[in-house]
Length: 346
Image (cartoon, rainbow, N blue to C red; front, top):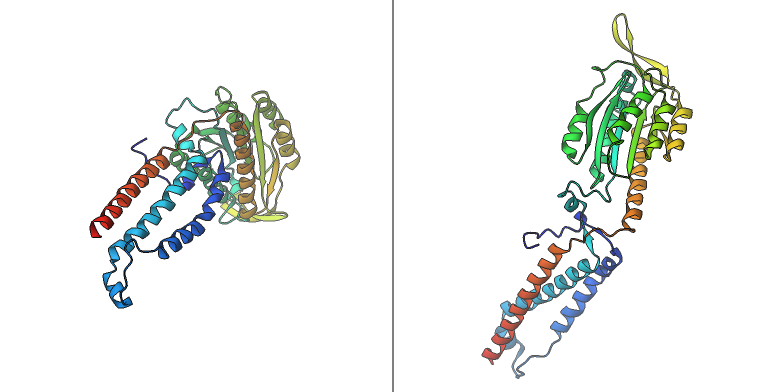
């Protein structure tokens, strides 16, 4: 408790956030305290010209009174934060076995050659990576893993809390070192295997592709059935503009870009999502892809909040208590010293 002094409000979540609305009263309370101090009558009345009074006035006393007002406001603020019952997901990560409220998330991303198409900036794959990075940065207390797939699939990172390592693994993937094709079922099945033996009840797969299943021995619907049997929710995302897109094509003369029709098996992706309790989304540009991840992020966070309402995790008010006690001690010390100074000066 005593080595924790971080009171950055954005690092915390709150069980009783309504108390924080009272912070809007701080300017009013500060103004009232200042007026009270400004119009307070002198402890030792005397008659003298105003020039003499200003000469006798001590700037140190004026600043001391202002500091006392600031300390009162700080004490009031810390008390409100304590009432709001703050907690941090990062505090729960200290104990790896404590995942009562975390979610295991697998990102299954299509890295086939068509993901180099330039209807996204700079291409579909890099856009998918950038949006995935933003999504990862918004999660707290969740283990996230990554599966890359094309004609085959492999787990680039198991579910982890080391988000920096996870993002480095995602950034390394380019799709050229893997067998070409689009094995949606294999990609989904590989992601399921990374979650099936885990003890966490909340499991999610975000499956992203820009094409149709044309490789792999496991069909997408069979993989969806596996996910359903393991209580895994699958969100599916189809990426690609409506119409034609500038897409890389392998020719006898090397890699060439040609305009090709965008074909996404939305029917199968929708069926996968519905079978597992998820939802299908279509992204036609990076902005819409980013919005999709934000919607998934919000939905999963709401699930976490609903689960938290059933079991209360421990609060972490230690830093706020530390600052409240320190502020109170400083206030009492300065207030006592101030009155002592006044008595001695009379």
